[in-house]
Amino acid sequence: MPWRNGDYPPSYKNLPKPIRDKAVEIANALLTDKHMEEGAAIAIGVKNAKEWYKNHNDENKADQMPE
Image 1 (cartoon, rainbow, N blue to C red):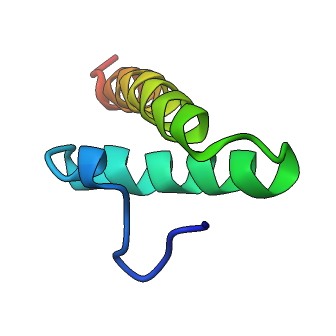
Image 2 (image 1 turned 180 degrees about the vertical axis):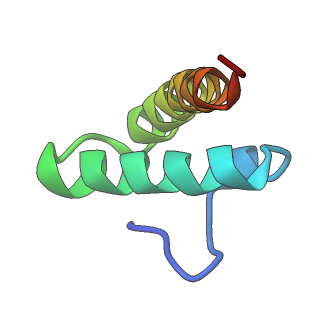
């Protein structure tokens, strides 16, 4: 079941909004594109979203560093 409009798995409840939104995006893609089971899509969504957030923030910090 794809999630949208603020609807997301209960396990995503305590994630920061940027990570939660990305996790929902990833999980939805896994459900529709890969026909993955819901539980696996939820877990992979969180893992990949946390990695995305870490990398995304590292890039932003590097862009803001004074020369």
